[in-house]
Amino acid sequence: MANVTVSPGRAGPVEIAIQLETTDETPLTAKAVSVTLVDTQSGRKLAPVEASRDGEDSWHVKVAQLTPGRWMLGLGISISEADHVSVESPILIK
Image (tube, rainbow, N blue to C red):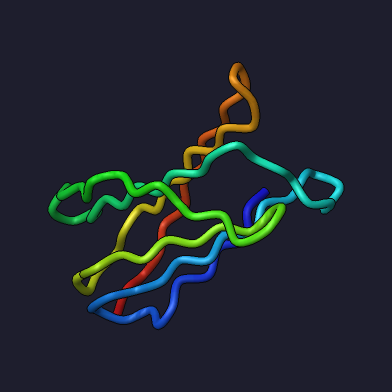
């Protein structure tokens, strides 16, 4: 599971904070995390961004410019050399 916070949640530069958890809600340690963003209306896809580690289970990314609208946020999570997980969720930028 991933707890994701996008702030400030409006057009312009945003910071994305990611906290990873197992299904039992204990911290999940990953080797790497990448973030992709796709504008669902235009199909425009931003280049994937590698997240920086903040702690054992915490990561963050700064995105220079998001436009208003609905976006699909994707996380690529590398747990080990052989174990990778991808998750996606829509977000709204005002």
